[in-house]
Image (cartoon, rainbow, N blue to C red; front, side, top):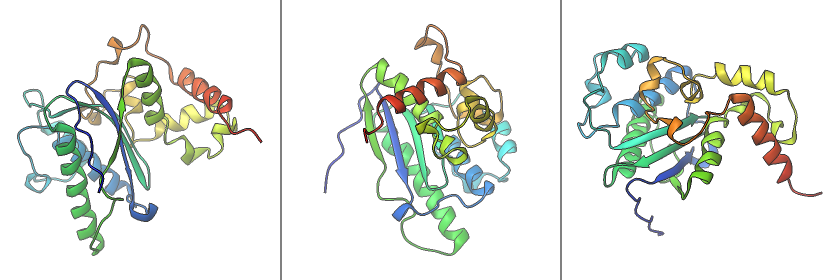
Amino acid sequence: MATRSPFMLGEWYHCYNRGFEKNTVFRSSVEYERFLIYLFVSNSTERLRVSDIPTTELHTIFSSINTNNSDPIVEVGAYSLMPNHVHFLLKEIHEGGIASYMQRVFTGYTMYFNNKHQRTGSLFSGTFKSKHVHDDTYLKQVLPYVLLNPVELFEPNWKSGVGSIKSISEKLLEYPYSSLVDFMGSDRPQSKIVHTNWEQYYDQIPTLDDMLANAKEYYQDHSPQV
């Protein structure tokens, strides 16, 4: 069995996983929200179990739990949840932080999902995968990739140039299960999951229209030749 290379402190990684045999892992808004809660409470050296929280209401949990004095084990730069797969942009800030964080999130959610649906066994396709983001140029490619991942839910052929940027933009900003609106400056409770100051990486933060236009151009330039 292959051994994962150690994550390096201070380095960014694109981490991702999909449902076992590409099965759906989120069947309702309640399940998406439960996963978001795991993303929130799992990122601390002080272990907090979701089962210890007296409520499962998402906004109440995000509003009531104070993370100002907590010691996070990873820096969450971005995330995107899709019906059968998930993407994250994470920085290792504690030794073993990414591995521990992902284990807590996936184990906790799998136990919740299996109990709810009276099933057993793996929910996700083995351990999560990861790619080292080796420089700022690559970081600026991975970040939009993660944030724009839900576009395919609204416009499956957008990489071929189908669909208007205006329409896609509006639908993306309404999608509640990614950190795109947080990146764009939203102050919603879920913004506590991410805590990266992206201004340090950009002279000017890109607009959503710019990211979509650049992504479309990239996919068209790199599409297979017929």
